[in-house]
Image 1 (cartoon, rainbow, N blue to C red):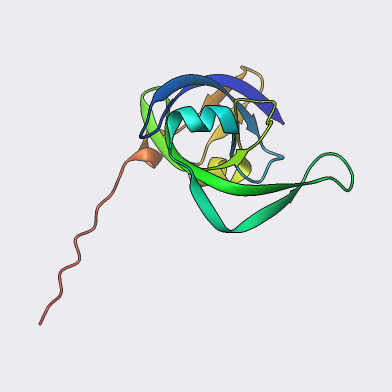
Image 2: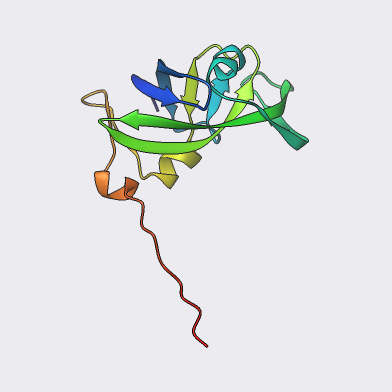
Length: 130
């Protein structure tokens, strides 16, 4: 199932409003290579990833990732995005990101639901006792 909504993305180089395709059939979150270059410095993968595409026997090699923050209803989320050359969408939010942030897709209302409690940062102070 797929939904496309505008989100605000932020990297170390720039920020931009982009249309994000929420695709529960995609494992990873991905971003178009040209857009990724505008937002963030690429992190090279030690070992490139070979991913299957929708076309039979067609694979794509991914050599870089970026880490980006993105916002929905003023809730700050972040994740790693595979940099995909010639990606037809600006951004694809895959199932791993949706599971991580417990994102729900409401197809009746064409909206994405994020529980604000999930995005709270909880710090635990561990003190070593002698």
